[in-house]
Amino acid sequence: MPETTAPKKNWGRWGADDERGALNLIDDTKRASDYEVLRTGKIYSLGLPIQRSGVPVFEYRGPAQRLTLASQTDGAFWESFGEAMDIPTDGAGGNEDLLIFGTHSGTHLDALCHVYHDDHMYNGFETSTFGSYGGAARNSIHQVDGVAGRAVMLDVAAHLGVPWLDPMFRITDDVLEEVREAQGTSIRPGDILLVRTGWIDSFYDSLANGTELSAAQAGIDQSAVDFIDRYDIALVGSDNGAVECLPCDETLLSVHVKLLVHRGINLLEFADLRGMAADGVHECFLVIAPMKVVGGTGSPVNPIAIA
Image 1 (cartoon, rainbow, N blue to C red):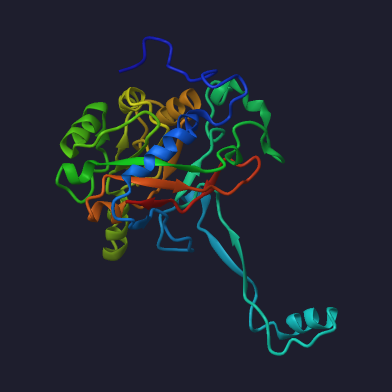
Image 2 (image 1 turned 135 degrees about the vertical axis):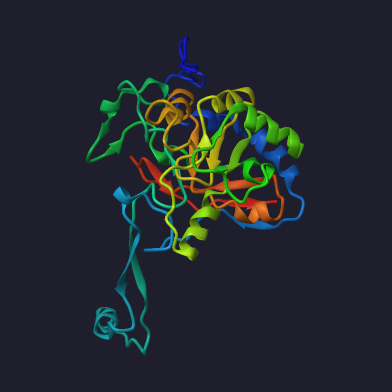
């Protein structure tokens, strides 16, 4: 339903100059208590591989490129290093790479500056603070520093008994609550919410069978933000490309606006939740370490979940 009242905002909740948003909910005391979720010590990597093909990518961002800077073919190059230090190379050399990829390709974390609405970003900072050369002067990804805390996964696909949701399925507040209750999963203020749609499973199935994948993606709709508010969630992730449903619910980037802009909640996209789902793991201690890209709108990540 369209909003009839002013949207909820966390602007000023943690101070007028705050650039960390809802991550402030994960303080040292909570983080220390979150370790109680550890049961088996098993590690799950939620990151997709970085490669030129065989991974999901939005066309305008382009695929990742791994280029070779130096290899065993560059004997003269390595000889010059030895000569510069007046020592023999003795057959030593090295292999080095150069990576070129969009910061929102593959598994990545959105910075709070990633999306704007009505010329403002989270906490009221104006879009004019973002420049082409320096990037984001406010809400940059480097402000995240690192994330570590309890995460809960609501496996919507498994709950509905399907390998993946229909592309046009909208995950509502009611659906999330139904899955939470069925799983018996408790959610505490400051927890990280992971929502599994099965989209990555459908991507790899399509790749293996040579079938065309729908451009639409199941994801949370605007009503699901009420669920996130109710439990005071610190960060939201999903195994699809935008966390929210595609096409977006009613207006462009509507859920991004409500979470990133209004509430200061970072989004983890293209999280590979297949391993956790296969083992029926619904809670874990999650560590996300984005690169400290000053001015960056996001960062590729390899989130590590420990169950």
